Length: 350
Ligand code: SF4
Image (cartoon, rainbow, N blue to C red; front, side, top):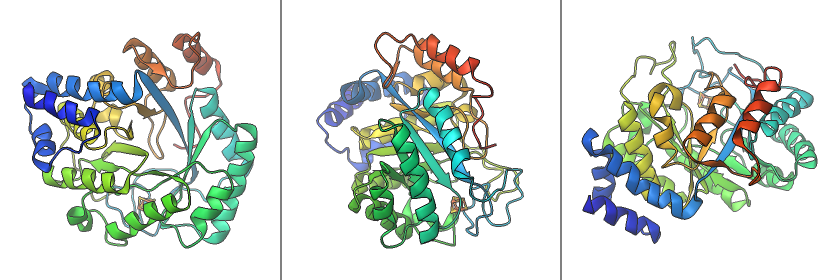
């Protein structure tokens, strides 16, 4: 389709699409879905080849959050059946992170629930990160601790933290529909502070929260303006016991269109297929690999993902290569490594 080819050509030169073009991607029909994927694939191929980066989540503090994010199983008063625990001990965090490294992860994401950390919390996490980096200097560490106060991003950076994740989640105009205890501006300010401290900014969105096409385009452009190095795209996991528990609006094709739109708006950013891919994309996940260049391996913060071995099989079967794996490595070797490990498909989180 000519207009999709034109859109891909723009992205190949790093040119931003206009809003109407981004909206048009979201409004394509199912008969055009392979054209959309093919156009986005050209962009993915130019910037990332056939590589897939693996990321691994370690949930270092779970539940018990005072904030009210409507989508979150860890929100205040959540009736969702998830694990609740305060800070894991450093050796527990390091053991969980090690499992991710053994599975092939290039980045370990250390995530804590809560509005934001105290300075003492940051010191605690900085110590864990510093220990991990001594053992694995080549593995990236991303911290995700909520809203940051003055000086905290700098402390994390000095400890060897690679990146900081804080998602914008949805459009500014829609933000009041998904959270009342902090604002879109609060989130945006934390991403900016992390970047200014020298941390690689990671910020993304959650689709499927009752937003309009315009909202999705707005958040994609807002993300682009923050110049994130990585953009996780989540699809709502509608946990029972949360306000968005009944929100099932996504189809696999809709998910592919959203990923493609984000790829066109942020062509050279690492676009990561994040939470909800298994339940919303289902058997179309391999098609999504033609758009994104990064996935989480294994489980999410409070829900089980596809087993790590299945992810590696999917990557190999779709003709992609795990980022960082040696040219000689057969992905099936990695799968076998994962399967040999005791319980290696289940990290610390539920
Ligand atoms: S998204 Fe973060 S801040 Fe919001 S309720 Fe969940 S843990 Fe708390």
